[in-house]
Length: 224
Image 1: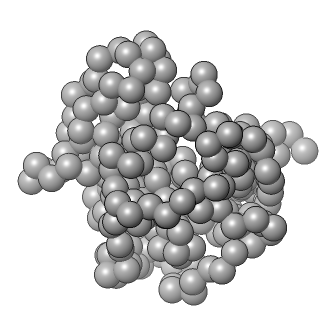
Image 2: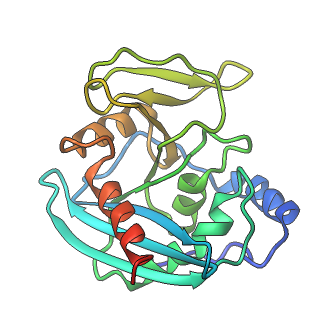
């Protein structure tokens, strides 16, 4: 995949936050999603004892959800844990995975936030810009904004709003009576389309299948 070289990675947390603000100029929100044939999931895990980060990208056909390709990479951890700056900790290893791909995804689901972020630049938005590919943030936990819990049935959701009342995401049930996920626009997609895609990628588990596979693959890489 082509990767846009828009900033350095060897930066301080203060510089990283400034980069996020600068990248807002590159953000595109559009609900005219092209035909999707391949959906990728991207996630990373950490081995604290070895100070390593393991990344995984899994590509599935859509809407069949058949595994097409999976790539894994490992790098030294080069950025501290700072809430809101996840991309600078996980981004380099995920980009290594994307560089290895033989297939180009039409859409990427990231384990993290999109614009539901204090600077509107969660990992899904940031990486979507660098890869110039439509992206969705599908986080397992809440980071930013106010919301109410949705009803317990699959497909139910409540919007997440910022302090000014702008809708920045949705708290979504992907299965009956399971903990919700937090969906937000990443790049070049609208929120309702993002919710629809996530639900179409669910196969009986809480996480959409491409993301679930990437999460498991990144975790498995820690054991090797």
